[in-house]
Amino acid sequence: MSVDIRVLSEAESRPALNLFRQSLNRPSPPDAEWEYLRRSYEPGRTHGAFAGDRLVGTALVWPSTLVVPGGRVLPLAAVTRVGVRADFRRRGVLTELMRAQLADVAARGEVFAGLHASEPVIYGRFGYGVASLAATVTVRSRAAVVRPEAPVGGEVRLVDGDEALTLLPRLYERTRARVGMLARSRPWWPVFYDRPFGIGEHLLVAVHSGAGGDDGFLAYRPSRGDEPDAAATLGVEDFHAANPEAVNALWRFIVGVDLVDRVKVWARPVDEPVEALFVDPRAVLGQDVRPDLWLRLVDVPTALAARSYGPGSVVVEVVDSFLPVNSGRYRVGADGVQRTGAAAELSVDVDVLAMLYLGAWRPSALAGIGLVRALDPAAVARADTVFAVGGAAWCGTFF
Image (cartoon, rainbow, N blue to C red):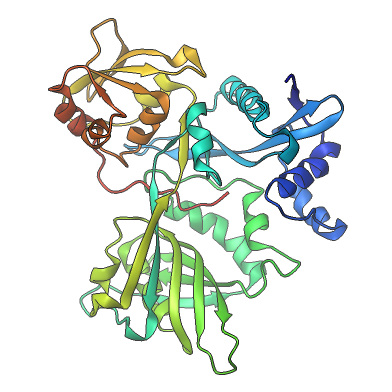
């Protein structure tokens, strides 16, 4: 079927939000909630799909930036609130939305697009790949004693909502050094921290201060069972720190809260040594590792040239059927990145390139399952060295 795609006006933002909510089988927001949520729409960044005069699909972008291997920070379009009406699914609406949105992202000079996928099987065909992983960690707090050897300094204090909204944006930027982390755009903070209508009720914020000032924070909320004397579970929804001392101190704080049985910390880096942090590693009841950031390289030459590489080089053929301008062969290595006419040693689709880009997956691991095509088998081990990254990539921001 044919649909028309265009950028929505400000007046069309509310119908777009209603459609998005309905696509998740959730009700449209009442007037008071809409007045609060309307500020989260970035002017000129919402696309709509129309069948005649009916809005049948929508997708929003928040401008952001991404930390890439080597420490450079490049523009990224944070894609969110993607939805298609139930009676128009599987009719090409989402494909046309993604095509228009990515063309707009490219025209704006944003090197990447990124998202969190509610239905992961959808986005690979548009060039998105899982570029980082995150672990949800569950701890039995009464058994969790931080090792005495762990460096812990400074102090932890609770801050109220108004102070949090003033303090945390600057503090988050201080902590944003890990590969894969995003800038949190203007709409992000009020949407996730200043939430009325019961959504943000009981959200508490703890801030760590070390020798150099504030250097970490976590935000959590309690939940309690039905029994009057039931112990609470604390759900930590946002946890960032600039150094190990702050990380350790915030862990010690949260597992030490009274009348709590368990602490569940969402979306932590997969290389965080949390079991080793506690005297009894069995205090960690489990880690649920899931996809974190889905990344799309919109400008492949710029993205490849921006990051750092290990010793050596490898010629990689990139296949991008959705944005064909990216397709071609690239010599990638510590001495730089160039398009080349040399024979390809490896071949990847652009979604697989995204999986390699931040270092979450080794080329040899993906070659073993057929995602990296080894045209020269000897190049696979070399590619492992070239694309290696110290430390696990981590986004740590839901949007």
